[in-house]
Image (tube, rainbow, N blue to C red; front, side):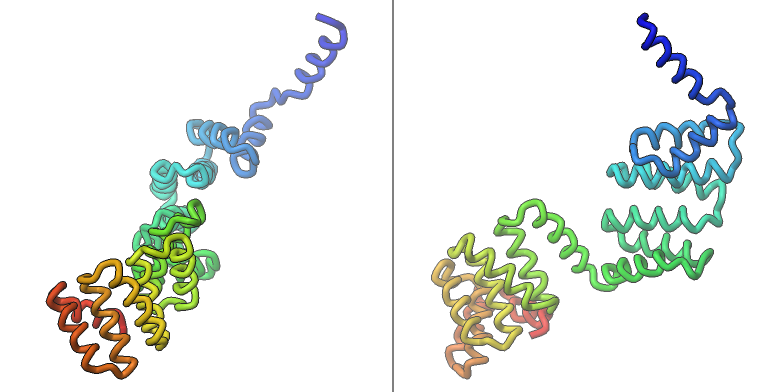
Length: 273
């Protein structure tokens, strides 16, 4: 070995910690703060497996490893880590919060709220738990918000997917959630495929809810040119005609719609029209 390499090796050896307590402290710090995910997992796992480590440090290592696993998409293993932490310390608000966050991100909103509630029962001023609980509760009270959240994620990956755009437009229109955004989604979908009857139907519903009966009529009429006996399109055009004062034509459309799809009137009654 060349002299320079020998000196370098000796210097590294001299810098390496030989004191077990120093090594344990470095490992603990790495478990909590390392920017390298795999190193963090290794160091946290070593702390968890150490029979001589205190319960407090084992709990903190389990929470840290669970949080890292959640960031890596290993949700089941993350929840297992938080569960182990809580078996050691059932009053650990952070473990409940982190478990709630995993449930939240997976769309299990009721489980998320339950975990946030447990965290807040221990630490009532836990601001992040309060905020995330409020977010999750919206999806529990209005489950369709979970569908919007999923569609947002899907469209971020595939922004020109006509089916996804139509589904988000329809979901927003049915639930009265930001009709301007709903219209933007439908418009984008129609630019991609102007002969897609389902999107014309969705946009027609948006126009109905906005009170623009002429635009609604035009969309439903265009959709019926593609599928003349579709009950949804007939019912929508009937409602548009009602709004325009064409009572006889409206009655004809509504009757044809009911014949094509029995119960369509009761279905539309749930759309808030």
